[in-house]
Image (tube, rainbow, N blue to C red; front, side, top):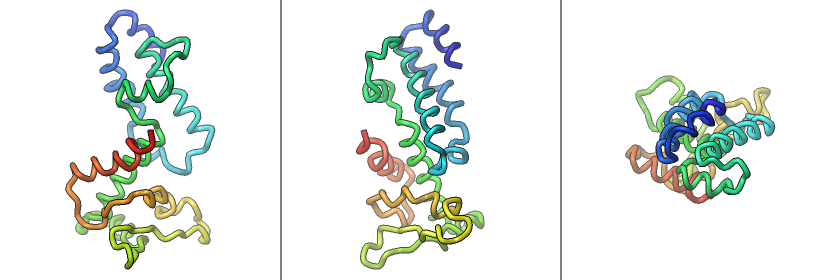
Length: 175
C-alpha cells in the first residue's frame, strides 16, 4: 500500500494526497481496530504499527529524508498515534456498552466488573482479575487504560461531548 501511495504522490498535490491517505490508507489501517488493537499487543507489533503509520504520513509530505518530526507529521495530518487511537476508540466503545442498559449481555458483564468508588462517584474502576487464570485477557483488565479518564462517564453522556472529552484525555493531552 505504501508503494502505491508513493506512486500516487508524484501526480497529485499534497492537499489531495492528505485526503487520500486519511480516507483510504487509515480507513483500511484501523479497520476493526477495537478487536485486534489492545493493551495485549506486543511491543514489536506496536513498533510495526507505528512504523507503518509514519511511513504513510511521510509519503504524503514527500519527506524521504526524515526532516519532519513525528509530532509535526501527526499535527499536520490531524492524526493520533496508533496507541492514542486504540485508547480513544476502545474506551468510547466500552463507555457506550457500559451505559447501554438494554444492550447485549456484554454490557451487563461489563457493569458487573466495574467498581464505582463512593468517594469519587464519577470514577469507575474496573476490578483487576489478574489473579484468575485468564489474567490479562479478562475484559476488565484489557480496559485498564480507562483509569486515566477524569470525567464522569458512568452516567448517560451525550455522544458528542463523550468524543470531545475522550479526545482531550487521550489525544490532545498526550501530544
